[in-house]
Image 1 (cartoon, rainbow, N blue to C red):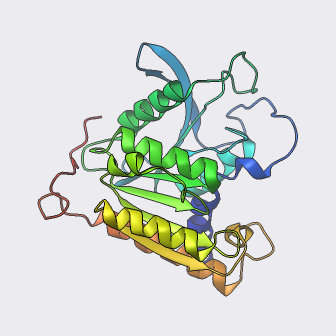
Image 2 (cartoon, one colour):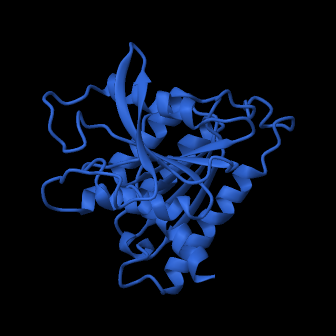
Image 3 (cartoon, one colour):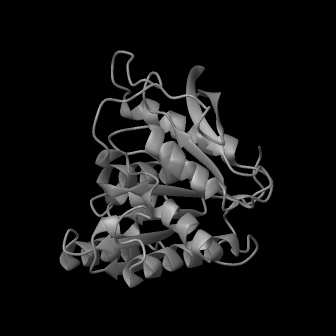
Length: 261
């Protein structure tokens, strides 16, 4: 049971890049169970992703790093999630693993990488979930979902995403889980976001916790707290709901669950 909670907790913190200080260090596969591969975005531009977890998994999770990008802590979280039988990909938004390489990627280039990663993560019968932590990660998760609406069945926003514009919401088709933390996310903002989702007819599940975002860190001091376990169980229930979607049943008949790759 402890291992189960650790895995679900990892799912909620995987995009924790903004919390780590220090310069990026070179990354290799020696310390991790997955490996780096090269994909090609639109226009023939190559980029790297880290993939882990069993290829036979029925659920794939695209993890969108925050400000720190792809670093060693992110890869360790991905490995933990992969050990819980999820197929996991982490997109590298930097030019190189070391974090060097010239000009910053444009928004269009980042979205192109997200779409290419979703295409690769998709497999016959597999449902894809995007996961973002904090404001930046949540925004990226929404952008990825909107860019490939027929190939993403679920979106998890942990501690962010309330400011996404209606134009972006309108492009999505997935179920959305918002895990909100007070007091950093005021009730009025949460209610406004929920109202916009309802207005646009998008399915939303909201769970608010009077706890710090650090409470979902399985290596943090609040790991054994009741709040942390409640958060992890809520995320697991959402993934089970996504996995149980019927492609022939309303309102989900427009989802393309027979993925191509």
